[in-house]
Length: 264
Image (tube, rainbow, N blue to C red; front, side, top):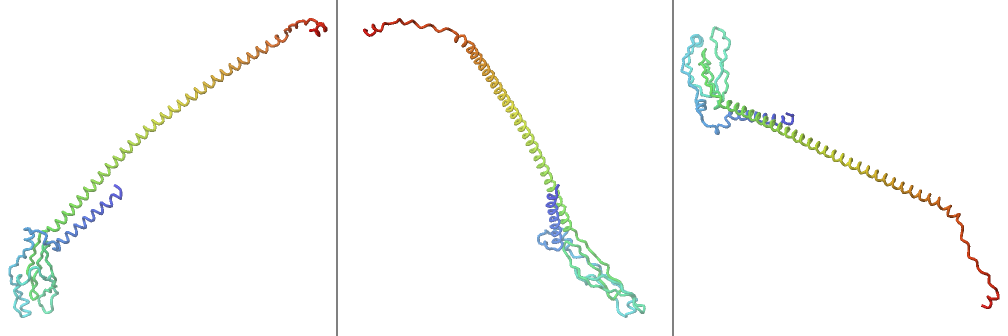
């Protein structure tokens, strides 16, 4: 396949992949939430995260050092899908006090098809935190995008195969037409050569006949000229004999008397 045929195919594949990525991004950002039907997977993904059981944490050393009562930490005090903090332990304080937990507040925006994670609730005055509880929603959007990309790739492959088949068929037909044309041209050339040879033979025959007729006429004329020359020669041979013959004598006239003539 030439480069001119490959460029449209590559462009189509790239556009298809770009469309699939944009579609997947739109689904993940909940841009098409109104167009998608509610499925059990989506309902389970949209359900709030399970609430961790209340657990009371007491730190004797912290109580003794600070003189404050321990605080009960509950997961219900934090909002579902709002920000919590990741606990970072600070180095031990001077004077034997227990290490406190420093909270770094972050914000987590929940998305319907995406994964919903509930961060741990931090007790800034205690020494421990509530165990994190996370729920993972189904990856329907990513699966749909992957299937769309696979479908687009399959369609592109099928179209490329069809284009290659059509190109091969066209090339085969063109080769057949070229072979037929070459055979017809060869037949016409052979026929023309035969006609030219026949015409040349006829012309040669006519020329030979003309030459033969000219030679026959020349021979006949030569024979006639020879006969005429022979006849003239015979006449010239007979003319001297007729010249030597005697002329006949004139009759005698009787003499007359002059007197008688006057009387008459």
